[in-house]
Image (cartoon, rainbow, N blue to C red; front, side, top):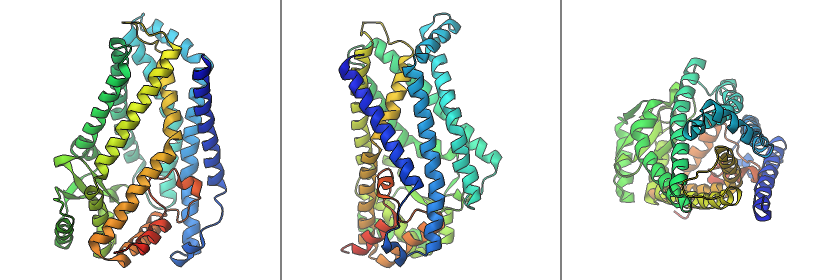
Length: 408
C-alpha cells in the first residue's frame, strides 16, 4: 500500500474510532444539565429524557462500532479476498454472479449485526417507555418491507457501479456520482408517492381550522401548498411529529395524527409554519445540492483510493472484494462527516424556527410547542455539546431560547 494511501486510511479510521469513543463516553457520562433547562422543565422530566436518550445512543454507537470493526477486520485481515475466491467458485468464475454473491454475504452480515440494536431501540425500548403502539409482528413486517427495498436498491446500485467502472475505467467516478445524484433526486420526488404509503396511510387534513391556518400562512409566505396530509402515526407510536417531503408536484406537509389530536390549534399552527418555512427557504433543494456535492467528493476520493490499490485497465473491472473496501470507506466517511452534516441540518432548522415565528407572530405558542413536544417525546433537553454535533436538530432548550430571542 502506498504511503499516501495508507495515511488516508489511518486518518479516517483513527477519526472514526476516536469520535466513536467520545460519543460513547459522553453518552455514559453526559455531564451537568444547562441551568436554563429548569426554567421550562422539571427535574423528573429532564432525567427521564436523558435516560431514554441514553438507551438510543448506546444502541446507535454500539451498532456502528460492531459493523465498523467487522469491516476493518474483514478488509485488513485479507478475509475479503479469501471469501471472494470462495464465491468465485460458487459462481463458476462468472464475474457478475460472483459480485452478487459477495454483495449478498456482506449485506446479510451487516444486517444481522445491526438487527439486535435496531430491535431493541425501535421496539423493546419504545415499549419500555410507553411510546410504541406496534405489535412485534407489525414491527417485523415493517422491517422486512424496508429490507426488501434496501436489498433491491443497493444490489442494483452495486451492480451498476461495477458495470460503470468496467465501462469507464478512468472516469467512472463522474458517471457514478451523476447516477447516484439522479437516483437521490428521484427518491425525494417519488418517495411520497410510492415508498411512504407502504408503511403508513395518508389522508388529507379535514379540520377546517387547520385548513384555514394553512391558507393564511401560505398567503403570508407567498407559497402555494400542494398537500397537507395526516399520517396514521398512532399505529406505531404515541409521539407527535411532522415533516416535509417531496419535490415539485409531490411536495407535502405531513402531520402526525397524534399531533392533530393531542395539541391545541396554535401549536399545530406553529408546526405548519415551521414546515412551510423549510419550503420558503428552499431547504429541500439546498439539502439535495449539498448531498450531491458530497456524493461527487466521495466518488472522487474513492476513485483515487481504488486506483492506488488496483490497476486500471480497459475492460478489466476491480476485483470483487473491492466492494468491501467501498463499504468500509462509506462507513468511515459518513460517520466522520456527521458533525458537519449536523451543523448544516441544525442551521436549517434554526432558520425554519425563526421564519415560522415571523409567519405566526406567536412566540408563546412556538415556545410552548417545543416544551410540550420535548416532554411528550422524551427529547434530551440539554444534551452534551459533543453529542449535539451529531444531531440533525438543535436541542429543545436551544430552540426555545432561539424563539424567545427572535426579532418578530
